[in-house]
Amino acid sequence: MRANCWMGKNKLEVQQVPDPKILNQQDAIVRITSTAICGSDLHLYGGFVPTMESGDILGHEFMGEVVEIGSKVKNLKKGDRVVVPFPIACGACFFCQKKMFSLCENSNPNANVAEALMGHSPAGVFGYSHMLGGFAGGQAEYARVPFADVGPLKIPEGLSDEQVLFLSDIFPTGYMGAEMCDIEPGDTIAVWGAGPVGLFAMKSAYLLGAERVIAIDRVPYRLRMAQEKAGAIPINYEETSVLETLKDITGGRGPDKCIDAVGLESHTHGLVYAYDRAKQALMLESDRPIALREAIVACRNGGTVSVIGVYGGLIDKFPMGSLMNRSITLKTGQCHVQRYMQPLLGRIQKGEIDPSFVITHRMNLDQAPEGYAMFRDKQDECEKVVLRM
Image (cartoon, rainbow, N blue to C red):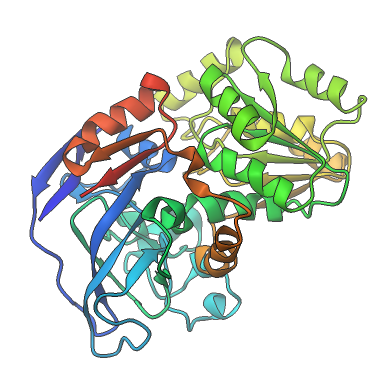
């Protein structure tokens, strides 16, 4: 089969690789019909996530048709059309029973590697380094799906791939980011990052009752999408002071809740950015936490900061004094996608949201390397790339 393979930092190749096989009787094989390039894939592309190996198949947002099942798979049959969540979860462990699926204790065969870096291991993840299991990803013609009774969501007739594909990751991730804010009527929510996850966080904040949503970014077309597609008030941090503008909008108090949808590759201008880039280059800091620092400082006293942007390691100059002294609540986590898929499918079916609004580019699998470069470099106003087989 064809698959998009990581061949080193900023180097991808679509190669012929062996077809996946059933390795466990709880597995299913899915013929992929649609997959997508995620912002967190760019962290792999740029070499920011350790334990990648040449030839690894990328991709954790995918859907398709079940073509083979193991003997212990009872909830699926051949021909079912499914969306596959990015965290792999067993459904039976302590955390799965609590519906904290991205913390599954049984799905990461390389848990010892993750424990050495993080203290404890999260769940295995499709196409996202050997630290998180070394599982082949979904930017390919076929994928093996472990614990197939727990993960894949069957899709009813009448819905297109583009309407439901993002139930695999970015829609539930953005929704969980807003949900962790415990939004109350009248709340003002500020979202750092107007990429696809940020846009879903903004739309979800309104779904959950926010009065105003503010989008913070530096790319004009992304801010335009946030305003036009998500109803957000745009702030371009290269043109104005974010902290002062947020104070002006909120009468000096600051946003009630803040969402970091950027993560480890934050940008800014001036000495702060130069400092973080220098420390990162010298391996003294693995992540650039610029958006996170700003979100904490900007949040009103007693507010909440929700972190859904991906972080991989160590950060510097964390404003702990601001967090502690002002009674800020910090919530974070990889999304427990399986918890949200069915309820969000219901919202799609009711017409409350059409997730396809984030798509700007449609390409075939062979164009994946081109799509990554376009997405990373923000060419042709690229916001979200969907790959078709």
